[in-house]
Image 1 (cartoon, rainbow, N blue to C red):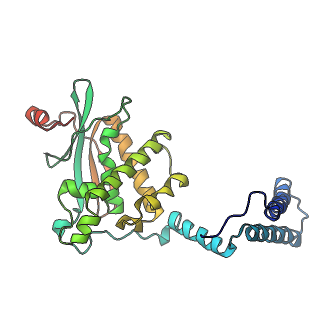
Image 2: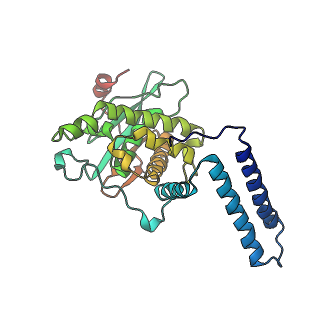
Image 3: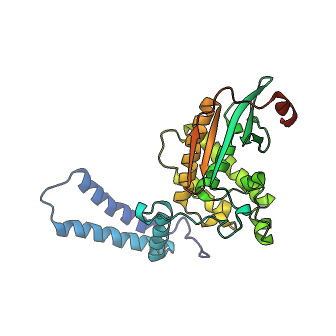
Length: 292
């Protein structure tokens, strides 16, 4: 940071790259046509030449190779730490009164009601309507009306969802700074924006169906997006888990167009249960609570 990058016509840098490419080519050539009689000394010589060329090119570019290695190790530990070393980020409402904590388990019924030609999604906890009734807000029916699933996934797996805190009336008002900065409207807008961004990407990969990983190009956007908020403490592997589990439940809900979402904050899990087709609110509730 703060260092000027080399000019694109830097002869020293270009020559260093050519040498590096040449040395790597030697290794690739050997791997493509391995010879049983190649000596250990020859392999070590090839690797030494590559390392020397890498060092020369990094120096020409103004990069400290040691810093680069440590930076990559930090990224790897954040994104792909060994399973035995994974420790979930402590819940952000630990130490607060139970009145300001997420409950151990949230069961939310989400189902469609037809309003004219438009599908409207309802969310209920204990038969009480939660939040606004939503449509996809798009010509193409993509299921975005069910995006409360992602708020539940973030709450369950990350311990974070300003939007859900507001809906459940469990803001941490006993601490003015936390209430304003972490549970306030701006934090809620941040969460909604992040969900919309990831959803837009997910449409291009069939909502992560059959996938066990999230592209790093998407994951690496998240730290900058949430910088300055408590959730920045969550590692990328936690975000990846929240995204994949959230979309797993979303795909089921989108398929059935109704279901009970179980967000277990204590166990850091989220799951889907089928909801009987006859589960509908009273007509007067529908008429009085739909918002356009």
